[in-house]
Image 1: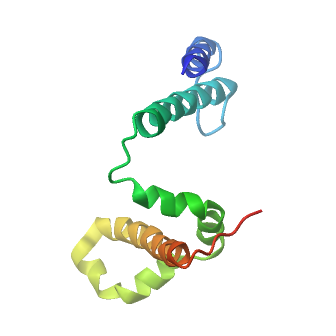
Image 2: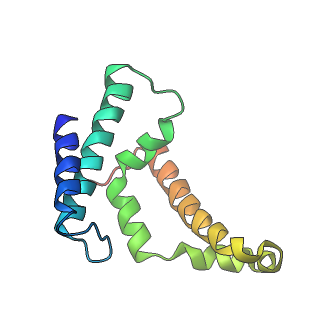
Length: 126
């Protein structure tokens, strides 16, 4: 966590000369985002591994055991089309939230595929 705090501080200090801009991924943004990641890793390590709080986190294990599969499925297959074709009539009732529904359905379909793989003990490794 100390490294994370140091990286966030360095990123904020460097942002005085080079602003933190995500769209061009400036150097200060890289330090700042890396520091936040280190801090979050430290918090979750302490909370889950050290303190042993695991209730309600079983779904993360499903993603973690086949994270490469989840990434490849999300990049290669567009499940939004499936969700769109199955719920086409809902668009008029959901309005602007229809896009949110499509994104949620996309991740839900990927999660259901990962659950089936997890239960059948199918794990893709490199």
